[in-house]
Structures are given as C-alpha cells and as structure tokens.
Length: 478
Image (tube, rainbow, N blue to C red; front, side, top):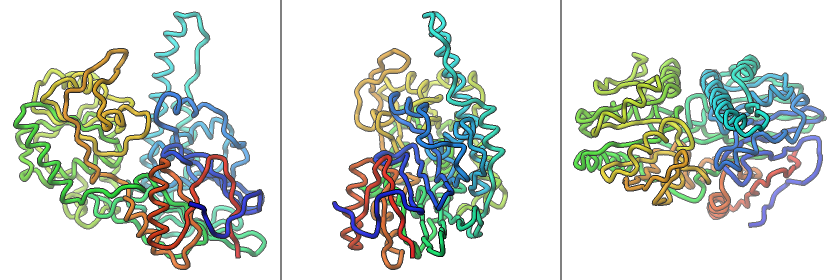
C-alpha cells in the first residue's frame, strides 16, 4: 500500500528517524529533531534470536552525548532496556516518564544488568579455557544506577515543558502500570506540529488496567502494530478457556507452566486467580510465583493502585494487597525454585521470562515439557526467534543447555490475555482523531503491519506509512 499525506523525506528542522521497532516488535527507538535539539522516544533492548540480541552491542546510530532528553513510554525492556547503555555511552540529559514507570524501571534495569553480568561471567569462563580475551557486559548494575539518576517522574495529563518549543503530555495507555501515550507539541520558528506516539496500547477490558485514553488532535501519529493482523478472543471466552485448561490439567494429574512477563502479566494472573478462585477450583492446586522480579513488581503495582480500573481497586486496591490466595507461594531464591521440580504434580508455576528466552521458566520446561500430563499456557506475545514462539508454532523438540527435549506437553495459546490492543482496537483508537492525521506504523512484524494498514484504510480511508529502519521523515508544520 502506498502511503499518502504531507510527509517529506530529508533533513528538515522538525523530523523523526526510526532507529528501532521498525519492521520488528522490539528495540523501540525513535529520534526526534526539532531545530538543533534532539529527543529520543524510547531506547529499548532488541530481543529475539541470538543474532537479533547481538545487535544491542552495536554503536548507537547517533551521538548519545548530543541527545537533549529521552521520553520513555513505559518500563518494558524492549522500550527501556538500552537506557543504561545510553548513559554509559555519554548521554547526560533527563529521562521523562510516568512515576510508576520509573519505579518499575528501577527493578527491571537492575535485573537486566544483573543478567548481562552473569551471562558474560559464564561466557568468560569458557573463553578463558580457550585462551580468548574476556568480554565486557553490555552494561553493569552501576550503569543502571546511573541511568536511574537521570529519571524525571511525571503524572498523567500534566503538560511539561522539556525544551524551548517542546511540550510533553503523558496519557494513560492502559498497557501496564505507568504506560503512556506520548503527546508532544513542537514549535520551530512559529510553526507547530503535534506528534502523538501511542507507545504500547492496552487491550480494552483487560484486568487491572484502565482502557487506553482517547486522543483526538494530532498532526502525526506513530502507532504500534504488534497485533495488527489479528483479533483477540473475547475476555469471557479467554476466561472460559483458562478454566477448561485447568480442569483438563487437573484431570490428567500434571503441572501447569505459565511463562509470564514479570511486569503486567504476572499481576493480571494473580488478580484473576483471586477473583475466580472458587469458579476455577483453584484450591486443588499449589500456585507458585517463581520470579523475584515479578514479586517486586507486584509490590510496586500495589503501591500505585490509584491507577487501577474501578473493579481492581474494589477487589484489592483499597487494602493495597493481593486477593486472598491461601495456596499461593513466592519463591525468591534459586534453591526454592529448584525445589519445585521435586514437588510432583498439581502445581501451577508462573515464571519468567515471558518469551522463554531466559529465566527460571527454562528450567521448568526442562523438567516438564517432555511429560504428556504437562500443560504449557502461553499468555503473551512471542517474538520471532524466541523459544516461546517455537512452542506456539508447534515445535516437537526444543534445545535447552545443549540437550534436546521432546515436547510432549500440550501447549495452549490464550491470546485474550494480551496486554496489547488487537487490530480492531488499534483502528478504533486511531479513528478518534479528527482530520485523520498522517499515520506511521511502528512496533510490529511485517505481516501485522500490512494487516493493520489494510484495516485502517478500509475503516478510515487513510494510507498508513510503515516505518523502515533508518528512514527519516519530515513532520508537517502549520
């Protein structure tokens, strides 16, 4: 589909360059130039295959020391995960984000740095035996601490002047705690432009979070497209499916593994387990949150319960505690996690990482994926090249630490738990804008982006541009 609109290519005084999440989901990073000032929208980690993740170590395609400010849409690592590297490379400006997103970044960036350090430590032991020079981690926990010192916490719906001619307003994106739609009013030599970046938009009606805010005025919209080619199952159908999975697993006598992102999905599942404790007959199970990071994130969620939707505030927000789950346990240490594999059957284990590319879930897959009575429930997006994507796509064998494991477990994909808006919701969100602003699709794989572009053209008569990596677009001013 050929895009139409007021865009021009080149090096105008108000332009944007797409340097991540262009033709792919992860690595969100867009460079906005207003006159001589530079603002980075997100600075996320590239996730996926080993080759994809190796790109994180490549030099930034700009001078970090010349970036005046960063605006962060939310705390997920594919949006925030390279901020410590940015600071390590010379960035000295402020990082603006919602206060709850800032609190989550403190634990997420520290955890990402710890993983970097441990992976390099393990690799360097092998390199030393081969007589090879040691490698350095992408960044350290100290780099993460330095990045946190640059954060400036904001609230929703409160305009903030960032630089001369640049005003920021954050609105609730409904994706995870503190996630934001970014609205930027830009002015250069008396000419103005309003840029709206959707960040990651939430799925309407999802547990805990409020629905995404409606925005009606913009000259240019950057819209995520993660699920741009599909419709989620309804919330009720998804709840019924989860109940059916648990019933089937209970009848078969096995365990249930749920790879869950530490921020967002873990809290949503705990909320739903509390809400449907009787209906899903959960008293028959041991329920384990096997993720120190998810446990910390849950505590942060409870501190910010004013951001929940009305139903979640009613259930547990006032007491700032989880719903009563008498059979829920938290495993913080590695020893506690390993002990789970000696419990036998009847255990629901939620563990990271959400795409199965690291973390404790890989150990549980090693001990359970070969069992015919095991059920694996996928409740989040699985990027290309990840172990989770292989399971969703029906892999018969997986490789874990050099060992081939046959997948006899039953794999269930419950798309209705997604924290992302689906195709119809993305199109409807864009439809609230008056005068149909120019539209650029980011943060999506090619098929999803093409599907969303066709849907928006059919619904609104607008031809969306699909961002290409490295492309620079002049923004319309008036």
